[in-house]
Length: 259
Image (cartoon, rainbow, N blue to C red; front, side, top):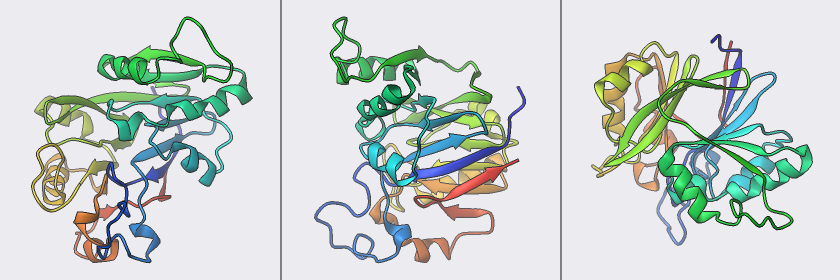
């Protein structure tokens, strides 16, 4: 399927604790630079006719208000960790205004977590004010949301399967520390990719910045942005100044366009 022109907005680029982290007085958490202020990781994907988010973080309500989003067609989930699903209840504003259920796309693992965490949404007895959800189970088969083609990419968050996604020229991957060779092939040919880069020190389930740079070099994508960043990585200006051409730390409200 042909991919229409897209706009990608980074709603959040921080790890599960966000930046600043509660109670921390490190130089990153106390930085005055707006690019060092990171909500939990999510993106908004838009064409002329379709709009959806990847993940609903605990900051989802504020992210929607900050970007003045009036229309949302769908939610696409990467995996069931709380920092990626906690804001789902707030889609009720969109379902109330549109009069239509929210289309939600998730693999079986994440769908099971949504049914547990938001049991009242999926209960046989519906109470007033709950969000209306149409839950679509996805696997690794490509599909479309409106006019936007979606190619799922299986990545590993230690032993948890997580879905990354490719939308035409753009690939988005978060919460990973390993990608099988066949799945890497799906990334190749992208114009731009986003990959998690938690910190410099080795982590059991996230790529470090150095590991993420190796991956970008391996798949030969010319433009790369790093997300899901912790305060341990360092200040935006300090880290970004040392990156090579074509690589950059993402930051909240960064907007990319693809024709």
